[in-house]
Length: 264
Length: 83
Image 1 (cartoon, helix red, strand yellow):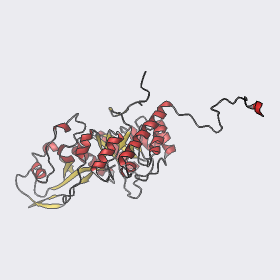
Image 2: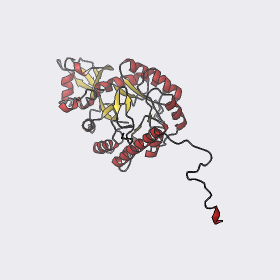
Image 3: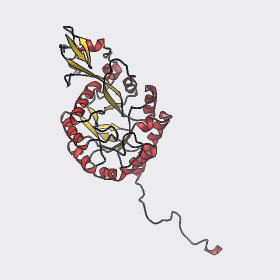
Image 4: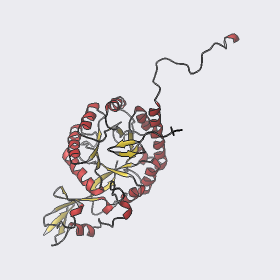
């Protein structure tokens, strides 16, 4: 008997992932909390950022615990406001972390952190040419996602809602179109504030979900990470099982026979 | 004569290589054997640091040969937590 509790693995740029939950490392209260939460999430791909070293202070080391977990790293280009800055950040990250994978993100405006579609497309094309595996954080715009795919991105990462907003899938209808059309994996990035949001994205057919804030700022991050893990697995299982379609009118689950008629 | 490291002026010395500078600054640590598994994630190597001079990334393989020149503007970057 085949094990039907296992969902199909995800493959991005030839790399196989058992877990469809990707996690971020930001906003955790300590490296220890981050480490235990990521372990509980089952995540195999974990984002990091890059920053100019501040010589007078020492940041807490998170690289060593991540190495111990054996996860793959996905450096981002956060802080970049233009395509040129993002390309520079990606090259630095490749040098710093020894991986050619990059989460391309360019958001010039700090209030909403909305990705700049034109700069993202331009930088994506350049980075693909430079040999990077590019996963762009982008607007939930079906046309843009096809353009990003066409220039060689390994996946697209449309937003569910603004970064850190915990709004869930504000872009749900657009995500459905993106998922239907995409020839590369679709990772819903930003927005999910609750495990149910992540499950919803997976039920829609997203290939993976990237979660940071909702786990990191929970009272018990490790427990929340586990909740997201279960939700992502449940959502994927449901998607692969084939969800029942919605109907306007009722359809009985039990036979509507008239054996009670004799009582009246 | 000075060079600049992340905005701070430093006294230039002849024969100072990038590698020596980074070692002095504490950014080069021994490479744990366990970190070099399949090459896709050589994470803990040298604390996740990258160096650029005049906005050109200097590959780590050349740090030992690259002499710091007076007037060099060296930028040191490090991987940190992020989403």
